[in-house]
Amino acid sequence: MLRIKYFIQQSWLLIIASFFFGLLIAIANAAWSPRIEQNKIAKINNLMAGLMPDAAKFQLEKTIEIESAKGKTIKTNIYKALSDTNSTLGYSFNCQGPGFADKIELIVAVDGNFEKIAGFDCLESNETPGFGDQIKSDYYRAQFKSVPAEELTLVKQGNEKNIDSEIVAISGATVSSEAVVKIINQSLPQIKNQMEKRN
Image (cartoon, rainbow, N blue to C red):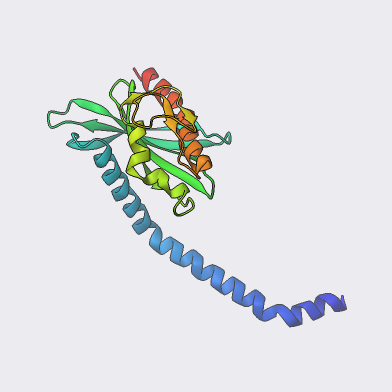
């Protein structure tokens, strides 16, 4: 009993300060959440436009649930890429999975029949600067353009200019390279299957 009393006497200021700062963080988070969400939507639109430059606009087609690599159910938004005449050019969606340092979230674009990958870009990534963050580089991302929308394989050596399902890993960043391939392999078949069922 004396120990508890002594602990309370010695730590009351720390307890009050922790509560106060925790409350401030919660208030700040609530205040900034709409702005953060707006910025994320703007970034998604910019990334989709970069992946499918011929699209005049993107409209939310549907929100579906898929299983992540860790077995968790996650929501993903499917956007339809439309031309000036409202014909479907393809689809774009967000997907995520674990990287080397933290979660990696991608925006992936495919053609209208889910036969070819138009490319991917990083919505969120905190991979190691100079190594893992090269998944954002043009030379790595270019390997995914126009490849068949089927299971991709990561290889340590090869010709990164070949348009096929073999993706050459980034030297010194195999884990990050593999994470991108795994995320796409995990999400694309599930999304394709659900989109085919909608008809």
